[in-house]
Amino acid sequence: MLYFIADTHFYHENILNLSRYRFKFFERVILQKLCRLPKEAVLFHLGDFTWHFNDFKGYLELWSRLPFEKYLVLGNHDRRPERLSRYFKKVLGEYALLRLDGLKILLSHYPALDPVTDRYPEKQEKVRELYFKHGCGLLVHGHVHRNEEGIRCGCAGVGVSCFNANVEWNGYGPVSLRRVLGL
Image 1: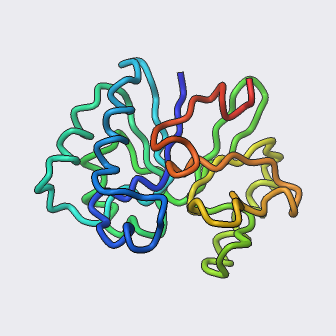
Image 2 (image 1 turned 90 degrees about the vertical axis):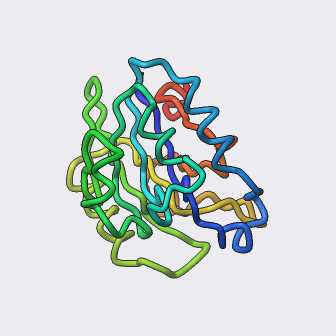
């Protein structure tokens, strides 16, 4: 079974000041929920995995002991791919394409349109380009954090069907492919 997660932000302590939806030890909640996945699971992390690699609380060690396959799509905070590869079966780059029973799913940290901030417009444009070029039916992304306005993204406004896998929108845990597809 496939699962998706984004924006774990391990060790990003300033995120508590940036988002009122984060709380002390949010990392523990994320890891507890990940521990419930079956060992046959395949997890796609859609970016912003960790702020640094000084694992003084053991979060990264716990992550590396999770028994299932883990893949990373790079986000804007994933600046050291060579160090990240230790924690994933494969680092896929900034974008990846899944083909499942005729459905093409684009994986990206970035949405097709982020109406909350004006950061990374070139990444959003690339998402739109890839989505339409490959005839995708779904984009699974992260990046847009929970906000006062309740805006998950602006993808529908540019004709892109999507699911935001940011942990803040999903109970601080992974989401199954079934949930992403609305089944």
